[in-house]
Length: 223
Image (cartoon, rainbow, N blue to C red; front, side, top):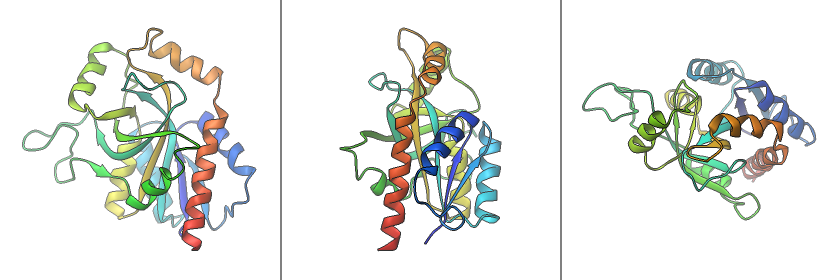
């Protein structure tokens, strides 16, 4: 069975995920490793590389919170990435905005992991879309508008997914990112307040999706 690495950026996310996983019958020594990376692209990439090289992870899942770029989303909604790009990268023409020179314009999610992630949409409704990444918590309307203009199909914005996707691309390791929306651009109460309210209401049930996703991944590999 492939060892699966689960990577989160913040202690709050780690505690919620660990609490959910501990109630399940997973073999953490052989099947699953959970890691806390810290916030941002460098922390995420370094941790992903360590998980692949030292812990022999053969597929990587990133999870945690993200900001919503689509106003039809609400706090607590789930977004599964089908592609990943940087919203704060520009290497000049002929590269696309978000593309590091010499690398793909978009990093793709592993097709098998994406299929499994969407296989129980009736129980846990999820949005599958582009996720964009940058080293900033985006709150200013001008910044949000720029990202939405450059990446009109992106539903979520975070600070880690594309960096982990790039690392997995370089190592040829399957990758999937699942993000819980903590705040949505353009909502009347503002991003900062939405984000703080999100944590005060800590949506533990949303992490149940990750638990069931892992169960289905493990089951598919045993067949």
